[in-house]
Length: 256
Image (tube, rainbow, N blue to C red; front, top):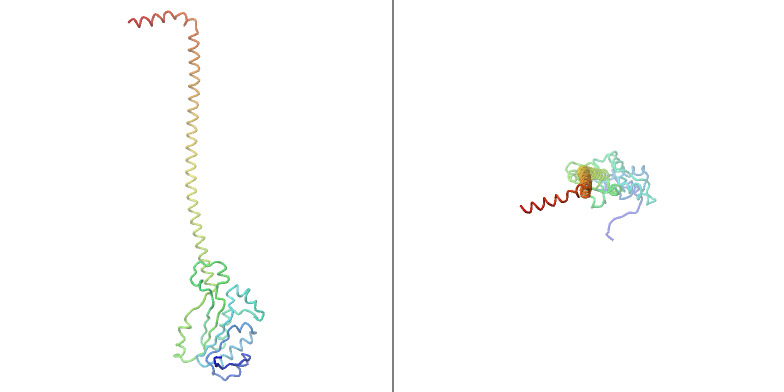
């Protein structure tokens, strides 16, 4: 429909049919995880042969740095052979003579680019789920210089980046909890001191109340004794016998 020149054929076989230095780019998007490793080596070698100076080999594949991908979703496609670590796939073009390589990590959740406190599931499944190796064949310096900025720019999220952020966030939470615990301990110690002082005050008040009750009991006892003595006096023979004298004394004071 777009008037493109296309061929449906075996990839390596078609590369082998091309002349040296005849194409600018060879791309393999989600292909290398489907072929044996010796076929992958041959693909990298044949791409190097057919690329023009400065030409690019691009290989994109699932990223096993993403633990959810490497341990789980990769195997949902039964035609996948095995996950390929980025360092291994980057090593192949270096080994077969390419001038430079770049690992581009791709397709991560943009939300995680700026998250400073990722959750555990972000660490397990947040690193870029795909990556690409871009390898460039050697060429004159002025031609390679056109690609310098692209090769110098980093892309995507690594497991190390998210794990480091997670550790830092966890350490900060632990430190905040420790500070809160220390503050709570200080408050508890202060409350304990206040409680101990209150207990001491209560004991002192109780002692005062006990002393006061003893004094009241003592004076009540004295009052009973006094009343008894007064009653004994009033009921005595001597008190009755001296009643006329007391009357005269009272009467004489009134006359004076």
